[in-house]
Image 1 (tube, rainbow over the protein chains, first blue to last red):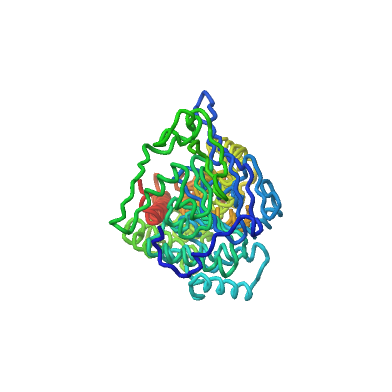
Image 2: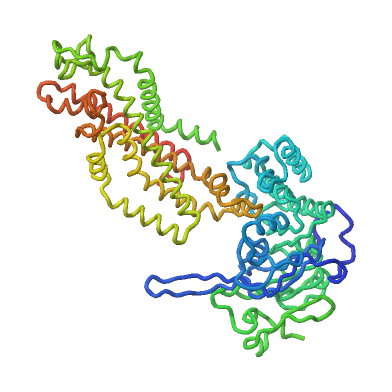
Length: 340
Length: 277
């Protein structure tokens, strides 16, 4: 499963139990619907349920992986939790406070605690701003540091992410993709956040650079006690960094559990299909592939019952009529499937 | 990125020619007191409407004033009107376009419908009407030309804002807590300046042309202050006996406007080769 070189050895640590550490983030029945108005004369309103009733909690210091195909709503979920979008319904309890509909000064304070790392390092940095002003901007906004102190903090941040202080005067186009992603990480770190939502942070990078960035993220987690929500479509990447994994399909969580539970004893047919699609570095290993027929259904017209049933190799009669609930199957392992 | 721009710009011969015309005009108007051979307002009744000679290179007008000197001083008016009017248009256009594009929804609708209304007026007649009510001073002309020329810039800036505000770096700015003002002016506007620069260069040409037309009609720059437009008016009255009085200011207007247009188009093509179509 794990194809990346390891920087640390703590990866084999026993996975954290949800009961032992304090909960940092508790998402309760979160919904984000987008309304699309179409038609010139007959106004048709269609609704996309990008995030449709998701509940999950994240424990301090852990990494929660969020996987799913493109279009399943995982990025929207990340953006709603970071409050780039206002949720349609539901609660986001951050450190016990509901931040689902806070505004202005409360929201500004929340921004100091939750940061986002973006997928595309080429579009997430302002081409007209120098590295130093990109990384130091939050220090100005939140009155954290000014003048010399700000400069010192910026060079410290750059060194932390593996860049040099001389590079503060350079502009984004002078950097490679991996370096740009480091700048984005330094920007996220500048406010000393508790939670970092990494939205496909390595998908746009070469595999060799991916490992560097993943190892950097792990090191920063140890150094600063960060909590991560790690969003990716790539199960091998998520498996490398996560303590727990949530699998999403069409705006809903279909399976959630400790990393070992998801990777070794997956319950949902969708998780099994995703796992069987991960390429193995060993050519002799024999695996039965579970092919997924067709594409992800249109989010405008999700299938009845279980949203996965049209593509499911194990579908039963009940699947097309009744939507399965997310239920606990073993300790900390949840799945939404009619299969026993 | 920047070296690419200059490389493409210098390969475009017409754009370079336009740039040379613009730079030359700047030099002429800045150096007017030193390079003008005579006092532009010195009347000499003995030498009325003389054809070009070695003494008066472009001849004299109906009051015996040196046409070359009047044209050199007139270039100052053209530049001043061109830049101040365009500056006003950019200020109004960029702010309204930024607000419309950034906030969207009803703010956008209100501003853009206002733009549509403004575009419905034939702007030249609007200017004529306003100037007829106000006194025709150079400042009034600049303000009126500016206030009737911002609509195109508003549309450009709005379009840029609509696409730029969805970009990740704007989202990133929001995540670190940047307010609307900071996002508009520090993050989006600097990235939208390219199209504004092009529109401004073309706008200068338009403003110069409008000022000439107003002065030609006698409601622009008032004599004795020289302007290319009011020299042309004198030329029109004497065209059968003094062709030089119409030809040279006409050529000056033509070359100036052409120069600015070529420069503006050159900048546009060099900024982004894909915009050429």
